[in-house]
Amino acid sequence: MGQAVSSSQDKPVRVHFEPFNIVVEAQPGGTVLEAALEAGVHINASCGGEGFCCKCRVTIEQGRVEGGISEQISAADADAGVRQACLATLVEDVVVRVPVESALDKVALKALAAGSAQVAKLIGAEELKAEGRFDPALAKVVVSAEPPSLSDNRNDVARLLAALREKGESDFVFRFEAIHDLPNAWREGDWTVTTTILRPVGRKSGRNQVIRVEPGDTSDCNLAVAIDLGTTTVWAQIIDLNSGQVLGTEGDFNAQISFGEDVISRIVHAAKPGGLKRLQEAAVNSINGVLKTLARHTGVNLADIGMATMAGNTTMTQLFLGVEPKYIRLEPYVPAAAYYPPIKASRFGLNLADHAHLLMFPSVASYVGGDVVSGVMGSGMHKDERLTLFIDLGTNGEVVVGNREWMACAAASAGPAFEGGGIKFGMRASKGAIENFSVNPITGEPAIITVGRAKPKGTRVRQGEDGPEYGLAWADDTQIGRDLTLTEMDIDNLLRAKGAMYAAYMTLLEGVGLTIHDLERVILAGGFGQSINLERAIMIGLMPELPLERFTFVGNGSLLGARLVAMSNQLRTEVGDIVDKMTNFELSVAPGYMGNYTGSQFFPHTEGKQLFPRTWEHMQEARRALKEIGPVPGRA
Image (cartoon, rainbow, N blue to C red; front, side):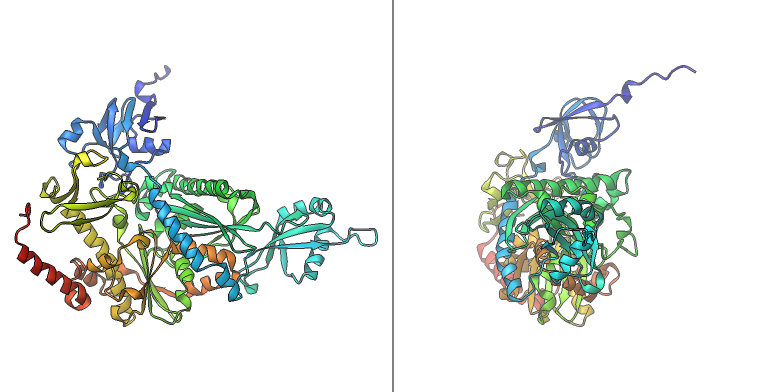
């Protein structure tokens, strides 16, 4: 047989991404979005590249692609080279311009960091010390011994155990690495060593682990890092375990968002060849980037960190650990485990020393994970007698109802609408994103406030390509060069998202024989919860209509709990108690959920007069005022 001749179609093509000036080689037949992922270039893909959301718009400036045009791209935009990156197939070298709305801007993260820092001042080491609960799981114990002699030639480990017993320590198991380093440590330290001990949750659950030995006295350096692995962002804090002081806080976007905005799209991607590995690496790289920045800002050597505590939802936890997540989304919705043992952080690629151990927060169910458990523990809800509603509002929505005696929990299928997903010009909070606007009832003109006070990324009432829409900003006044509008479909998506959350509260309460008005306290956590306008959230029916003084904000509850657990082994025990106390409601099969959801598909609610009496009265007053004003210009 003759030798096969290579076709030109087998040759890789060059994809040049602007404005980043990044070039990557890709195989013909792949999509622009796949090439971007390979190049580490972020393109919005809320639906995970399934072709539904049209958020992955790019412009082909040079070269040619096949496909990429859908009914969501106008003829004029198509003529200008606009394509959906997930549908555009590579056939030759191309230059692709990624639009400004895909940029990951960290401006909004600063406000979240400030909020977390404020909470850290309110709930921290001093409070734990006052309560006698400041007892970090990672301890450094300095011991000394007489050097060996012919009359006392015990082995080095036996000599260390005897010295530890003299300090009141007992019940040890040695990691091999500690044994390996011990002979030199004893002698280099002139028979004084510092032993790093990882304590178990309780005496019945395990033994003290000697994970490191160092020559001399290094007890003044005992560090841990607390990590919140969120669906959208990653946060970390370095903690001095001697004082309890937070040395620094840093956050960044979770690189997994390039594979989809929500957990379902990521589970779907994980099922693709190599998908789980890509997602695991994306999470690890994001955390390592945050750790590198923290080390630079604090002057901490990451090799000195001996413990990491991490909280994330069930899907994020399994993706980080590389554990198959597909059964989370398949009925009967079963996660791999509730608890994970302490594991070496370096095993997963984290840039920490080999002796550093990772403590993962346990999950309750497929969609109620360690981030919620961490937030509940950090807020103290599990020790409070008041009937409390805990709400974690972010890319995913989770709710917990209960007090120190009992708790019921559920996850609402709100989707990423609260962070811009499913909204035509929706985006996460970065510079130029519209964070607030009001409409003049006389002229219909909007007053717009953006993040960073920049030009809006993304006029008035008109018929658009997707039906009736309200123009927030003209193309000349935006960074994206397109009219930025609010469509009827956007409002429908908001209704569904807020309805899912409110129906979750109602269903949980009805399931335990209570009502909204029985609530004595509401705790709001999560990125969206930190910046929410409470009065307006009540007005649209997202939050229950209760006196404002009953609401409490805890900011990033996941990071809060991870930090507190790093400083208190007793709180690690309480985490287990919380998981045991929680009863999960699967809303998809819960009686009454669909009825509650349907009733929530109005502003504020079908039963607005009964459930939202003050809001209902305000609406009536507004209607009366509009009647007196007369027709609004431009309104049909």
